[in-house]
Length: 276
Ligand code: X90
Image (cartoon, rainbow, N blue to C red; front, side, top):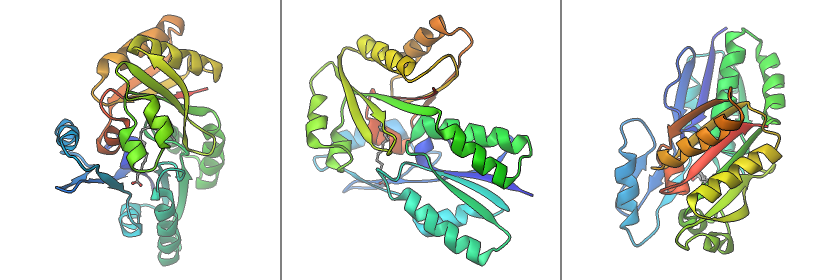
Protein backbone atom coordinates (compact mmCIF):
# COMPACT_ATOMS: atom_id res chain seq x y z
CA UNK A 1 0.00 0.00 0.00
CA UNK A 2 1.49 3.28 -1.06
CA UNK A 3 1.23 6.32 1.21
CA UNK A 4 1.49 10.00 0.39
CA UNK A 5 1.39 13.16 2.47
CA UNK A 6 0.08 16.33 0.89
CA UNK A 7 -0.17 19.75 2.47
CA UNK A 8 -0.99 23.24 1.34
CA UNK A 9 1.98 25.58 1.27
CA UNK A 10 1.05 27.26 4.54
CA UNK A 11 3.06 24.44 6.18
CA UNK A 12 6.24 26.05 4.73
CA UNK A 13 7.38 22.57 3.64
CA UNK A 14 8.27 21.92 0.00
CA UNK A 15 10.15 18.64 0.31
CA UNK A 16 10.33 15.77 2.76
CA UNK A 17 12.68 12.83 2.62
CA UNK A 18 11.73 9.21 3.13
CA UNK A 19 8.08 9.61 2.18
CA UNK A 20 6.08 10.57 -0.87
CA UNK A 21 5.16 14.24 -0.35
CA UNK A 22 3.66 17.12 -2.29
CA UNK A 23 3.00 20.76 -1.45
CA UNK A 24 -0.02 22.49 -2.99
CA UNK A 25 0.56 26.23 -3.36
CA UNK A 26 -1.53 29.09 -2.09
CA UNK A 27 -1.17 32.33 -4.01
CA UNK A 28 -0.59 35.96 -3.09
CA UNK A 29 -2.19 38.31 -5.57
CA UNK A 30 -1.36 42.00 -5.84
CA UNK A 31 -2.61 44.47 -8.39
CA UNK A 32 0.69 43.98 -10.21
CA UNK A 33 1.35 40.28 -10.07
CA UNK A 34 0.59 36.89 -8.73
CA UNK A 35 3.08 35.11 -6.46
CA UNK A 36 2.79 31.33 -6.31
CA UNK A 37 3.98 29.83 -3.01
CA UNK A 38 6.31 27.23 -4.52
CA UNK A 39 10.05 26.55 -4.65
CA UNK A 40 12.04 29.17 -6.53
CA UNK A 41 9.94 32.16 -5.48
CA UNK A 42 12.06 34.93 -3.99
CA UNK A 43 10.09 35.55 -0.79
CA UNK A 44 12.15 38.51 0.49
CA UNK A 45 11.66 40.20 -2.86
CA UNK A 46 7.93 39.55 -2.68
CA UNK A 47 7.68 41.01 0.84
CA UNK A 48 9.62 44.05 -0.33
CA UNK A 49 7.55 44.56 -3.48
CA UNK A 50 4.29 44.23 -1.56
CA UNK A 51 5.43 46.74 1.07
CA UNK A 52 5.71 49.38 -1.67
CA UNK A 53 2.17 48.97 -2.97
CA UNK A 54 -0.62 51.24 -1.81
CA UNK A 55 -3.36 48.71 -2.24
CA UNK A 56 -3.12 45.57 -0.12
CA UNK A 57 -2.70 42.16 -1.68
CA UNK A 58 -5.07 39.21 -1.40
CA UNK A 59 -4.48 35.50 -1.11
CA UNK A 60 -6.16 32.48 -2.59
CA UNK A 61 -6.19 28.87 -1.49
CA UNK A 62 -5.76 25.81 -3.72
CA UNK A 63 -8.86 24.83 -5.69
CA UNK A 64 -10.47 21.37 -5.90
CA UNK A 65 -8.55 20.41 -9.07
CA UNK A 66 -5.18 21.38 -7.60
CA UNK A 67 -5.84 19.20 -4.58
CA UNK A 68 -7.06 16.30 -6.76
CA UNK A 69 -3.94 16.53 -8.85
CA UNK A 70 -1.77 16.29 -5.73
CA UNK A 71 -3.59 13.14 -4.54
CA UNK A 72 -2.31 11.19 -7.57
CA UNK A 73 0.09 8.30 -7.17
CA UNK A 74 -0.90 6.65 -3.87
CA UNK A 75 -3.61 4.48 -2.32
CA UNK A 76 -3.50 6.22 1.04
CA UNK A 77 -3.33 9.98 1.15
CA UNK A 78 -3.10 12.30 4.16
CA UNK A 79 -3.86 15.92 3.25
CA UNK A 80 -3.04 18.52 5.89
CA UNK A 81 -4.61 21.97 5.50
CA UNK A 82 -4.41 25.38 7.08
CA UNK A 83 -7.27 26.01 9.53
CA UNK A 84 -10.70 26.28 7.98
CA UNK A 85 -11.27 29.13 10.42
CA UNK A 86 -9.10 31.34 8.21
CA UNK A 87 -9.06 29.77 4.74
CA UNK A 88 -11.11 27.84 2.21
CA UNK A 89 -8.26 25.36 1.72
CA UNK A 90 -9.83 22.66 3.92
CA UNK A 91 -13.16 22.91 2.16
CA UNK A 92 -11.49 22.59 -1.28
CA UNK A 93 -9.48 19.60 -0.11
CA UNK A 94 -12.59 17.93 1.28
CA UNK A 95 -14.49 18.36 -2.01
CA UNK A 96 -11.42 17.09 -3.84
CA UNK A 97 -11.37 13.99 -1.62
CA UNK A 98 -15.03 13.21 -2.33
CA UNK A 99 -14.58 13.56 -6.07
CA UNK A 100 -11.27 11.69 -6.15
CA UNK A 101 -12.50 8.75 -4.07
CA UNK A 102 -15.55 8.46 -6.31
CA UNK A 103 -13.32 8.20 -9.36
CA UNK A 104 -10.76 5.97 -7.60
CA UNK A 105 -12.61 3.59 -5.27
CA UNK A 106 -9.39 1.90 -4.12
CA UNK A 107 -8.00 5.16 -2.70
CA UNK A 108 -8.39 6.39 0.91
CA UNK A 109 -7.95 10.07 1.63
CA UNK A 110 -7.95 11.71 5.05
CA UNK A 111 -8.23 15.49 5.03
CA UNK A 112 -6.89 16.92 8.26
CA UNK A 113 -7.88 20.41 9.36
CA UNK A 114 -4.79 21.48 11.29
CA UNK A 115 -6.94 24.17 13.02
CA UNK A 116 -3.66 26.03 12.71
CA UNK A 117 -0.90 26.69 10.22
CA UNK A 118 2.89 26.65 9.64
CA UNK A 119 4.88 24.82 12.30
CA UNK A 120 1.88 23.12 13.90
CA UNK A 121 1.17 21.56 10.49
CA UNK A 122 4.83 20.58 10.40
CA UNK A 123 4.42 18.65 13.67
CA UNK A 124 1.37 16.85 12.28
CA UNK A 125 3.20 16.03 9.05
CA UNK A 126 6.25 14.68 10.89
CA UNK A 127 4.03 12.52 13.06
CA UNK A 128 2.27 11.13 9.95
CA UNK A 129 5.71 10.36 8.56
CA UNK A 130 6.56 8.40 11.73
CA UNK A 131 3.34 6.41 11.58
CA UNK A 132 3.88 5.61 7.90
CA UNK A 133 7.41 4.40 8.66
CA UNK A 134 5.94 2.12 11.35
CA UNK A 135 3.71 0.66 8.61
CA UNK A 136 0.51 1.39 10.50
CA UNK A 137 -2.76 1.02 8.57
CA UNK A 138 -4.69 3.99 7.21
CA UNK A 139 -7.33 3.54 9.93
CA UNK A 140 -4.76 3.31 12.72
CA UNK A 141 -3.01 6.45 11.49
CA UNK A 142 -6.34 8.27 11.27
CA UNK A 143 -7.11 7.46 14.89
CA UNK A 144 -3.64 8.26 16.20
CA UNK A 145 -3.17 11.53 14.36
CA UNK A 146 -6.48 12.86 15.67
CA UNK A 147 -5.25 12.05 19.16
CA UNK A 148 -1.84 13.65 18.52
CA UNK A 149 -3.46 16.87 17.32
CA UNK A 150 -4.90 17.36 20.81
CA UNK A 151 -1.39 17.80 22.17
CA UNK A 152 -0.05 20.36 19.69
CA UNK A 153 -0.25 24.16 19.97
CA UNK A 154 0.65 27.30 18.07
CA UNK A 155 1.79 30.70 19.31
CA UNK A 156 2.90 33.71 17.28
CA UNK A 157 4.74 36.96 17.82
CA UNK A 158 3.80 39.58 15.24
CA UNK A 159 5.07 43.09 14.63
CA UNK A 160 2.30 43.93 12.23
CA UNK A 161 -1.15 42.48 11.64
CA UNK A 162 -1.95 44.74 8.70
CA UNK A 163 -2.30 42.03 6.10
CA UNK A 164 -4.34 39.84 8.43
CA UNK A 165 -6.69 42.75 9.12
CA UNK A 166 -6.94 43.93 5.50
CA UNK A 167 -7.99 40.42 4.53
CA UNK A 168 -10.51 40.10 7.34
CA UNK A 169 -8.54 37.43 9.24
CA UNK A 170 -8.40 39.46 12.48
CA UNK A 171 -10.42 42.44 13.60
CA UNK A 172 -9.12 45.93 12.91
CA UNK A 173 -9.11 46.51 16.68
CA UNK A 174 -6.68 43.66 17.26
CA UNK A 175 -4.50 44.83 14.36
CA UNK A 176 -4.25 48.26 15.95
CA UNK A 177 -2.62 46.72 19.04
CA UNK A 178 0.49 46.26 16.91
CA UNK A 179 1.53 49.04 14.63
CA UNK A 180 3.25 50.95 17.42
CA UNK A 181 7.02 50.72 17.10
CA UNK A 182 8.48 48.04 19.35
CA UNK A 183 5.15 46.44 20.19
CA UNK A 184 4.61 42.76 19.47
CA UNK A 185 1.27 41.07 19.55
CA UNK A 186 1.44 37.57 20.99
CA UNK A 187 -1.34 35.39 19.68
CA UNK A 188 -2.53 31.82 19.82
CA UNK A 189 -4.38 29.49 17.51
CA UNK A 190 -7.59 28.77 19.42
CA UNK A 191 -9.28 25.37 19.60
CA UNK A 192 -11.60 26.61 16.84
CA UNK A 193 -8.67 27.48 14.63
CA UNK A 194 -8.69 31.24 14.67
CA UNK A 195 -6.08 33.74 15.80
CA UNK A 196 -6.63 35.23 19.23
CA UNK A 197 -4.45 37.96 20.65
CA UNK A 198 -3.37 37.11 24.19
CA UNK A 199 -0.67 39.68 25.05
CA UNK A 200 0.98 42.87 23.95
CA UNK A 201 4.71 42.93 24.61
CA UNK A 202 7.15 45.77 24.41
CA UNK A 203 10.41 44.75 22.78
CA UNK A 204 11.57 41.56 21.15
CA UNK A 205 13.16 39.92 24.21
CA UNK A 206 10.01 40.44 26.30
CA UNK A 207 7.89 38.99 23.51
CA UNK A 208 10.01 35.84 23.35
CA UNK A 209 9.94 35.44 27.15
CA UNK A 210 6.17 35.77 27.04
CA UNK A 211 5.98 33.06 24.39
CA UNK A 212 8.14 30.74 26.50
CA UNK A 213 5.95 31.38 29.57
CA UNK A 214 2.82 30.66 27.51
CA UNK A 215 4.39 27.47 26.17
CA UNK A 216 5.00 26.22 29.71
CA UNK A 217 1.51 27.16 30.83
CA UNK A 218 0.20 25.06 27.91
CA UNK A 219 2.07 22.04 29.22
CA UNK A 220 5.34 22.27 27.30
CA UNK A 221 7.85 19.96 29.01
CA UNK A 222 10.71 19.61 26.58
CA UNK A 223 8.99 17.99 23.59
CA UNK A 224 9.26 19.02 19.97
CA UNK A 225 9.28 22.66 18.91
CA UNK A 226 9.07 23.79 15.29
CA UNK A 227 9.46 27.47 14.40
CA UNK A 228 9.00 29.44 11.20
CA UNK A 229 10.08 33.03 10.90
CA UNK A 230 9.78 35.83 8.40
CA UNK A 231 13.21 37.41 8.15
CA UNK A 232 13.86 37.02 11.87
CA UNK A 233 16.29 34.15 12.41
CA UNK A 234 17.81 36.02 15.40
CA UNK A 235 14.60 35.82 17.42
CA UNK A 236 13.99 32.21 16.49
CA UNK A 237 17.52 31.35 17.67
CA UNK A 238 17.08 33.37 20.88
CA UNK A 239 13.87 31.52 21.71
CA UNK A 240 15.53 28.22 20.87
CA UNK A 241 18.36 28.97 23.34
CA UNK A 242 15.90 30.06 26.00
CA UNK A 243 14.07 26.74 25.67
CA UNK A 244 17.30 24.70 25.60
CA UNK A 245 18.52 26.36 28.77
CA UNK A 246 15.58 24.92 30.68
CA UNK A 247 14.93 21.78 28.60
CA UNK A 248 18.32 20.51 27.50
CA UNK A 249 17.05 17.70 25.30
CA UNK A 250 14.31 19.62 23.52
CA UNK A 251 14.04 18.80 19.82
CA UNK A 252 13.86 22.20 18.13
CA UNK A 253 14.00 23.08 14.44
CA UNK A 254 13.77 26.40 12.69
CA UNK A 255 12.80 27.15 9.10
CA UNK A 256 11.91 30.19 7.04
CA UNK A 257 8.34 31.04 6.20
CA UNK A 258 7.56 30.56 2.54
CA UNK A 259 5.24 33.03 0.76
CA UNK A 260 1.85 32.58 2.41
CA UNK A 261 3.06 32.67 6.02
CA UNK A 262 5.50 35.49 5.18
CA UNK A 263 2.67 37.56 3.77
CA UNK A 264 0.50 37.19 6.87
CA UNK A 265 3.13 36.91 9.62
CA UNK A 266 4.95 39.87 7.98
CA UNK A 267 8.54 40.91 8.49
CA UNK A 268 9.78 39.99 11.96
CA UNK A 269 6.99 37.48 12.59
CA UNK A 270 7.83 34.28 14.46
CA UNK A 271 5.45 31.30 14.51
CA UNK A 272 5.98 28.56 17.09
CA UNK A 273 4.43 25.10 17.05
CA UNK A 274 5.03 22.80 20.02
CA UNK A 275 3.92 19.71 21.85
CA UNK A 276 2.12 20.50 25.08
O1 X90 B 1 -7.26 31.05 1.83
C1 X90 B 1 -6.43 31.96 1.88
O2 X90 B 1 -6.43 32.90 1.07
C2 X90 B 1 -5.38 31.93 2.97
C3 X90 B 1 -5.71 32.72 4.17
C4 X90 B 1 -4.75 32.53 5.33
C5 X90 B 1 -4.95 33.47 6.47
C6 X90 B 1 -4.09 33.34 7.67
C7 X90 B 1 -2.68 32.93 7.53
C8 X90 B 1 -1.85 33.06 8.78
C9 X90 B 1 -0.40 32.82 8.58
C10 X90 B 1 0.23 34.22 10.63
C11 X90 B 1 -0.32 34.01 11.96
C12 X90 B 1 -0.74 32.62 12.35
C13 X90 B 1 -2.01 32.51 13.11
C14 X90 B 1 -2.76 31.23 12.92
C15 X90 B 1 -3.85 31.01 13.88
C16 X90 B 1 -4.77 29.90 13.58
C17 X90 B 1 0.50 33.06 9.73
